[in-house]
Image (tube, rainbow, N blue to C red):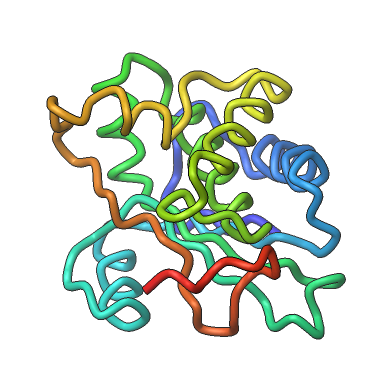
Length: 174
């Protein structure tokens, strides 16, 4: 299910729903993935509540409890405002940025953790971006601009361990 609390130019609920279904299958998730497109204030509240970080972030992933993951893989929240700012800075459409962030969130729901997996998530994201015809991915562009910070980018697009983590034998992100 896709919920638009904030609209994105050039992106309909049905188009995003179709993309989420394709990306979910490509990422190997069996259960449904719910996606919320919201504002930075809501993302800041989520980040404060679940990660104890008092700032907005671009994307958060909320994995479902292990016993229901075949029915519900989890939920993803995306800041439309941060996505639009990043899209402008990177020269692509906000709709594309939303899809990049949704894919990134799905990989976290699959159990990947780019902060401790020696590039495994970055390689998988790159493969799936090519399959899904998306521009430069979140991890890839973060690595390219280590010495050039981009306005509005956050490194805090982590999985929220509210209901546990994926089962890829990785320690939970904090």
